Length: 367
Image (tube, rainbow, N blue to C red):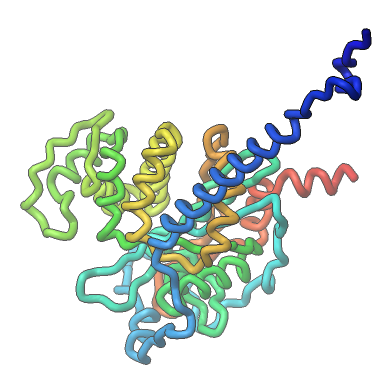
């Protein structure tokens, strides 16, 4: 009597046995496809809650609005630095692109400095998130607001004026023109909605100095005026609400603008660390509430593509921070009556290559 060969699935013709593996594989593939389609639909619905910019209906600034963006600062008798009148003689022209490829995703986060009665707002906080898929490193690069730059189509001004003059697209063009970093898209949040996002996460644990705690307890509610705050923050670790985190991020009366950027880094790092530890179900729920507060110039297709490529690396990624320009790479000057920071573009470009694009340049040097 012949027996079937268990390795070839050959059976005698008088005792045939059906082959089940192709059917099982087909069922598994159908289930996987169905789950993938369900996930795609859910992600599409969630992303659909974002406020997408319609560039065809973009408004223009009045001559008065533009004049206000180029207004002079009060005289400072104690200032002993260089005073420049007219056009800055830039030592270098537009920067070549530092990197451009599928292994990098760059997204600019903008916090709008808008008051209740304002229609035009500067970008009060500008943080460039750079996702390096090769190394798994996420860089948070903050740009100091008073950095004096070339703005395409306009006279030179502070970098935060680019957002007011031309929105997300002009800010992106300005960053690439001056620093050589292309930006894949921008996400903007009004500071008036920022506390709601923090409260959705259940607040954040942040470490304060005694001076910071005293100042926030005295004048924390910046939007409500002095003498209305009943906070009892202390030096050390505090569990802070959204309003408290906002006041901490905007605090500019203690230390320099660099220290203010460091405070913003602390808040963003705490937010990212908290989200990374949440289960997927809670993350989706938070996004459902958070995304209506956000405006972006990216399309649904771009958002889906970035989400697909970046989500797997978030849990194991290393987050690093830096600022542009760093100490020593700028000169405090007064240009046409404005107190600004004149950057050393070549030094900043080298810093960005050494941090954001190190692996590409190191590989090219070896080959």
